[in-house]
Amino acid sequence: MQARKKGNAQGIDVSHHQGDINFKKVAADGISFVFIKATQGKSFRSKTFLKFVKDAKAAGLMIGAYHYVDDSATTPDLARQEAANFAKAIKDAGGVSTFNLPPVMDYESNKSNLSKATVTAVAKAFLEEVERLTGVRPIVYTYPSFIGKFSGLSGYPLWIARYHATKAPSDASGWSRWEFWQYSDGQYGGTLPSGTRKVSGITGPVDLNEYNGTVDELRARFTKPPVSPDKAGTFTSGTFIANGKEAGKALLYGSRTYVPLRSLANALGLSYRWDNVRKEAYLNGSKLQTVQLIEGTAYVQLKPIADAYGAVVSWDSKNKIASLKTKGEK
Image 1: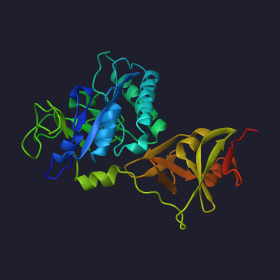
Image 2 (image 1 turned 90 degrees about the vertical axis):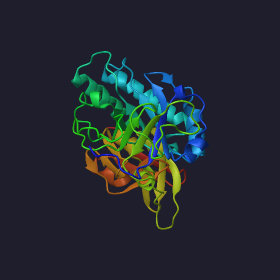
Image 3 (image 1 turned 135 degrees about the horizontal axis):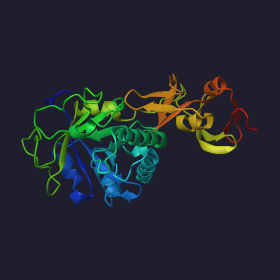
Image 4 (image 1 turned 60 degrees about the vertical axis):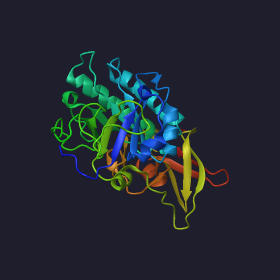
């Protein structure tokens, strides 16, 4: 994998173990982003998560949330339950649009002695469920000693822990580059560009990270783009009804109706994926040409997709309701 380079954006990751944090001082010390622990296991939530999100955002830092996969997650179903806990915390913090950076799966322990195949199955179930619940493709965080337990996950952005100033992590499990490198735990490893491992506003050690690019490049890659409305610059908000049940918001741009990608995919019984890096939407494995990203949610044009899969669409202009009925539904 690539080495660190001068000018890379500097960041930290924190949890309740850090105690009180003055994020204004953190930001003033050259830190531009922070990943905040949200949850662990099926029910645990960090007691400082909501406060840290609010304070870090107010300080102007780019923020992301991470979940620690517990050793009790021994099956894909249990992993999906952990993902639900994580998604609920994100929702309670204001929703995925509150965050500048994608959600993170922190998977680094295997005290249950799972096989490599099971570890991969657990990780895949968690990642896919987080993406299904949030509409955002997650990041994988792990250590060089653990990454070999994964197979077929290299399509996800990688955040690797390697406590060394200059020695780059080795290519592994299909990954040949990192997006984020945790190069110090605050006591060992590399140092900040200032030559220290100390970050103002935090008492004690804190994990140090950097993005593979400048601050502007980090913002450009992960920060959500502005809404792309129709030529008139306006849209009408309504309700999306799928097979008689409310399935989300509908947006009318001129004569075209858009609905959430996830809601439409679920109604049609199709797989979907949102590539947050490229800002691209995929339905049933095919890339969609027209997508609107609004407040962190991907919206896609309703009628062409419905027609392609034999569903019927109607628009109630008086009540602003877009309805979809799939085959076999009355």
